[in-house]
Image (tube, rainbow, N blue to C red; front, side, top):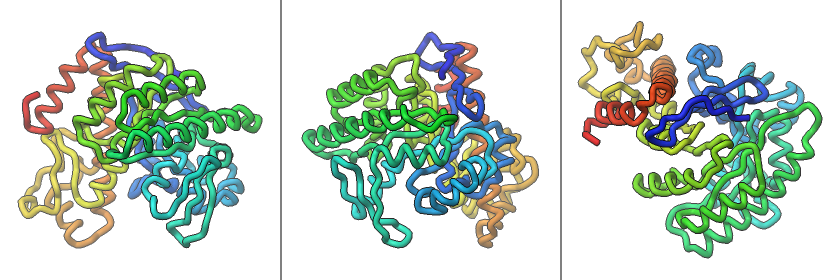
Length: 373
């Protein structure tokens, strides 16, 4: 499934090709989040034109709306949305974690009430695999128990025990998938912020031998130092030949840190969410287009950027769109942010190819964050 093409000898960064049912993905790769089958404010064609080969959908949201009958009638999530490249679908574990007041976890699975109409539903490891089979997900995630920082070791151990039991059940169901469906199952490392539990989780996952491995339970409210420490510790334990996925990161610093430690794919709503609130990436860091300072600014968002937004529109005009509440503002800002990240990933892969990733990380970070590292 993963063919490692190049490594940077100064760290664990690597370029690879990940073969999936709807085409090959060049990694390291950022996945835009299309929770409900759409990346907010973006045309699918625009994502294709930027070179995105893999986007994320969400089992929890798609199961509730439009529902599996609609997807089944269309034939797959790809046909329903007209996205003919790859989908990774999150199992819904994080949504269940986020909606803690609406759910109850047991050994069998998780019972929750819909945020849409309050109706009750149950996810089991097996049913989540079945839902993603209906979606025809190219990568599907096991159902897991995500935990917040600060819980006791006993609580973390119980959550890990449930996660691993669920992972084994999911693997068994995935092995009996319908003929003609070859989506890849990824297990998820948990263990909270206890290194011995993380190590135990990785050891059990290696024994389970799923096609890919995700590092879960990071970017859930911990400090940046904690993120870096536990990312480095966990990534070092992962088998090199498997694809590595860190869930829920989308800022340049976290992406660069992850790539340095051999992570292949990552996703986050951050780039599109901030765009809808007028905040955009530039080589010199974030800017908020609503700010007064851009009222008469005729420059593009980023003079070095080749996206269609930067090639045509000024900061002044974009500020006007946001101040006037025009929907074109979030659309243009989103297009810029996702183009910026697609180009960022190309530059990362190029730096790995040339054996200068750490130099690129240093140069980019100093310009973007305005501080020496």
